[in-house]
Image (tube, rainbow over all chains, first blue to last red; front, top):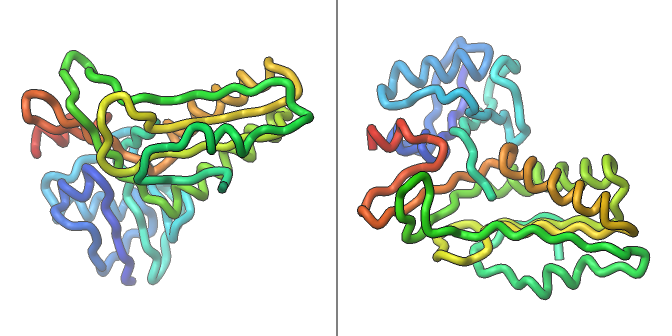
Length: 79
Length: 144
């Protein structure tokens, strides 16, 4: 299936891009992120990273589907 | 004024506070987070916030609603800056009004603590040494 990936802040700088459309068999954001890491060597999985699917906060083991937009958030630092 | 908002301009503190006045409330607690000149031993010159606004606003409103339900306060609002900021500016402001002070203090603390860990907002510090670093993502800067 095809999904769109969006990288933010440190993830975007590590991946060298803001967004990409990928063909994947990953069924969770965790599996998808691992695939992305294999393409972008500088991407790292920080413990407190967050994920959203189609502008809703999600879990790393949530289910992703065809056409979803998956947003990878490195550790946040608001305030 | 919206209950939760993101702005690239200096926060108007009088306007912010004014939206929360309520004759039923005898207590008002406000928290301001300022840009300080150092972090973990490094001199900070300025910093920039990256905000993913659609989700930051959605999650910010959720947190304010949680605080209202949990502590029984009557009014709550928060505003967060985005973009480049100078030392001393307010990066975030939280205001809570309630009939009595105890729940206002508790709710204000809850809101700022949750905002810091749940909103998709990132802080990049610019140091006197010329280096920059994403806060909480140190190892990335090493690669940067």
